[in-house]
Image (cartoon, one colour):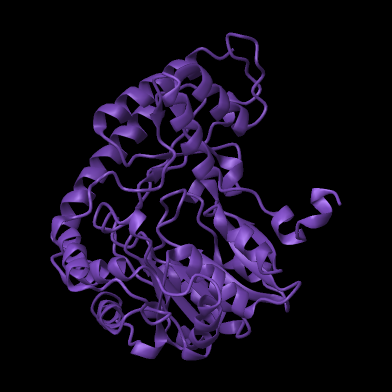
Length: 403
C-alpha cells in the first residue's frame, strides 16, 4: 500500500507549522556555524517571572504531580473566572471555563466538537498559521477574508457580512493580531459584533492571547464586552504564554457556554487528558500574582517596535506599518518581487524573498504566504535591540543588492 493511500485525507491536507519550520531551519544553520539571527519564533524572550517559577517548584515539593481534572484544577479555574471578571467584565462560572495544553488545543477541541463535514469557518487574513489547518482537520472549509493593507490588514463589517453563508459555523477573530499586530478599536469591534447579531447561527471564537501587549495607550476590548448578547455563542480564548512568557509551560484557557465546554471536555479526555499539573499551579500564580512586570515588558517591546518599523522603512522595496499590539511587524515586500539577487536568483514570491534573505544574510523570518497574505513577511521583535538593529541592517543591505 502506498503511503498516500494509508494516510488520512485530513493529514494530507495540512502542512507543518511554517513558524516552527523556520525556527528549526535557523537552529540547523546555527549548528553548522552560520551567523543566524532568528526572528521567526512567536514567543517573548523574557524569562518566566521568578514568583511563577517558585510556585511550580512549590507544587512539585507538595506532590502536585498526579492526574488532575481533565479540564483543569479548581484553583486555576477560579483564577480564570476572576481574571475574566476583573479584566474583561465577563461573568463566567467554574463550569464555563476550560484549561488545555495550549491555545491550539482549545481551538482543536472546540472545532472537533462542533464542525461537520463542509461547515465553513470565516478567517480574516493575515491569520495565525494554525487556524485554517485546524479547521480542515475537523472537516471544515476555511473561508478567508483579506484584510485591508491600508488599515493594517483589518477587515470591515461589510467584508464579514459578505463572507457569511448558511454553512458558516464559526468566525475566528484575533486582536491584537498575529502576524500583523493590528488591534481593533471599540467602534470597529461594534461594527463586527453587529454583523454577528444579525447572523445568529454563527459562533465567535475570539483569540485574546495578546491582550496585554498593546502600545500608545490603546484601549483593549474583547467582543463580548462590546456585545453581551453574543455570550451564548462565543468562546473567549486566552492563555499564559505571551503575557507571562510561559510558552513552554503549555497552558491555554477559555470561557464559553457550558453546552460547548462539556463536549470539549469529552474530547480532551480521549486525547491529551489534563494539562500538566505543575504548569497549572504555576498559572494560578501567574493570574493571581503581581502583574507589575507586564508594563516594563510592554515598554521594551514598544522601543523594539519603533526601531524595527523605522529601519525597515529605510529598506528599498519594503513598506512597514505601525502595529498597535503583539510583538510582530508584517512588512510588505512587493517592491522586491521581480528583482534578482547578485547571484542571479529571481525573486518571484515572498517565500523566495525570505529564503534568499536567510541564505545570504542569515536573517530568519516567516514568509507571508504562510499567513494567507502576500507578498509580505513576519518579523518577531521579541529579541534584543542589538539583534534587531543588526537584522534590519542586513535586510536593508539585502534589499539594496537586488536589481
